[in-house]
Image (cartoon, rainbow, N blue to C red; front, side):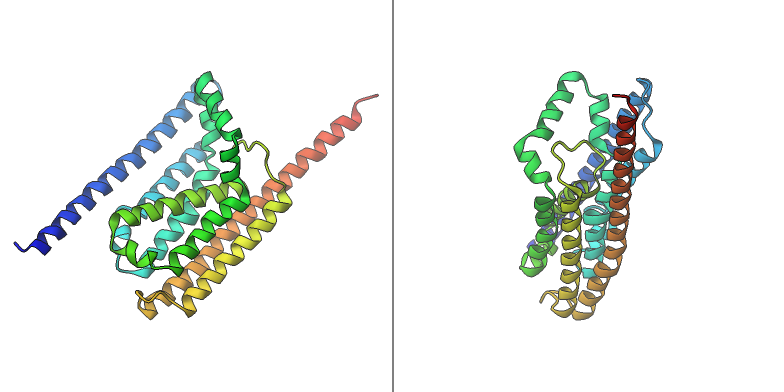
Length: 271
């Protein structure tokens, strides 16, 4: 057996081991989340079943971008790669954030771990990373770095680098989505006007990147493949962004309604 073939088999075997590990970790997160939901119910605070479904689907979509047929195809096909981006960086974060995992953790953890988590959320580093501007830079800015540098070509030939990049895409996508539509507690939450401005600018930057890829595709990608992937990024991404905008507006509307009801109750109290 030649050394090149042996090396190829070694990489393939390592890739399979890595994928199995990732799938097991993903399954464990679903089990832990489901167990926390059951524990919350036993304590008399039922956790919505649809959030368990959202979490499970989000984990499954995020895992599909780094393990399985789609992840394998992404090393050779820009369209498959773009599907991975849409799943890990946009759709999975929406599902995971709507599952409100931090709220569930605060409900089910013991007092000491819950307080530690609460202090972590209020810490300056956490507040900085979770700020809408920072999250947008990490999410959309990271994509510009990926497609405007040789990083894309390198990750297509390196399974470990592919995993690292996809992990960044997923985490950055979750941070940005949580900053916009997060249902979990957010100490020192920014104004909704600021969030709206950041959302509009990030959406525009994502669309401009898709058009840039269509007009000036990476040198390592075939023109037809690049243009199909860019169109997928633009149109499918727009649908997911529309969902985020609708949820954001709905949350803003509900918050306004709660404020009006609170003002009405205050006004009805006799002096």
